[in-house]
Length: 277
Image 1 (cartoon, rainbow, N blue to C red):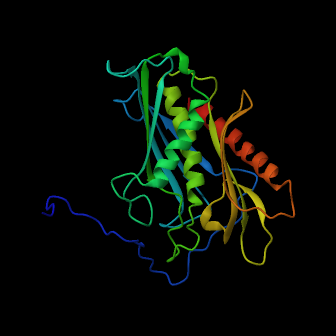
Image 2: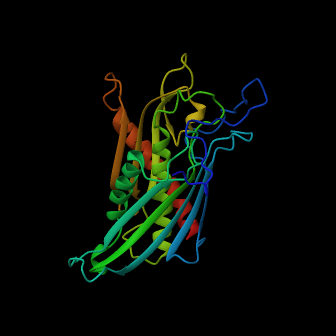
Image 3: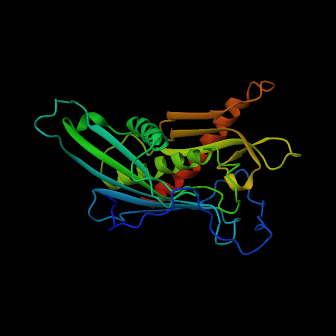
C-alpha cells in the first residue's frame, strides 16, 4: 500500500528552469594558484559534541545556478560502548556521509548508495591518522557529514561533465569540515587534517591540459585526472590519497606535480580551519 503521508519528489534528473536562451557567462579570471573562498563556522549544532558548517562557492560563477558546495558535520562522542561490545584499546571511529535528496541534479534516495559509502571509507581513513585513538579505550565516536549542496554544474541541460569528478571536491570538503568538528568536540588529535584537490583539466578542446587547484567542474570542458589528498601540515604527513583518471604517458612526473599542487591546496584549507577554531 502506498504511503499517502509523504509527497515524493521526481525520481529522475531535474533541471531548474533557465529563462535566458544564452548560457550564463562565466568569468575565468580566478587565480589558478589559489583555492576558492571557504566559509567555515563551528558550534552550529548545540546538541552535538562538536559541529561545523562549510560553504565553498566560486565567486566567478554568477547567477541563481552558480556552482557551490555546502556541508554540515556533527560529532557525537566519545561515549562508552555497550557492555556487549568486545573490548577495544582504541576508540571506534564511525563515519557517515550522506547526500541530501536535493543536493545534486539527480535526486538522491534516503538510503546510502555506493558512492556515499566510498566517501565514508575515505573520510574514515583520512581522520584515523589524525586522532589519538589510544586515549579513549572502549569508546566510540560518530562523525556524520550531510552534503546539502553538491559541487555540480546546474546550468547545462546534460550531464556530460558529471562523471563523478565532483566527488573529489566533496571529499576534500568532508575532510576539512570533519577536522574542524572533531576539534570543536575536544577530541585530541596530532594535527588538524585538511583536504585538497588538484586536477589535470582542459578549458576547451583547443587549449592544452594544465594542472589546476580546487577545480570548479563547471568551468572546464574536460577533466582528465584528479587527485584528492588528506594532509597533516605540521607533521608533514599524508593520511589518505584518492586518485582518479588516466594520465598521459609522455610526462612521467605529472603525478608528482599533481600531488604537490594538492598539498598546496591542503595548506590553504588548513589556514581556514585554524582561523575558524
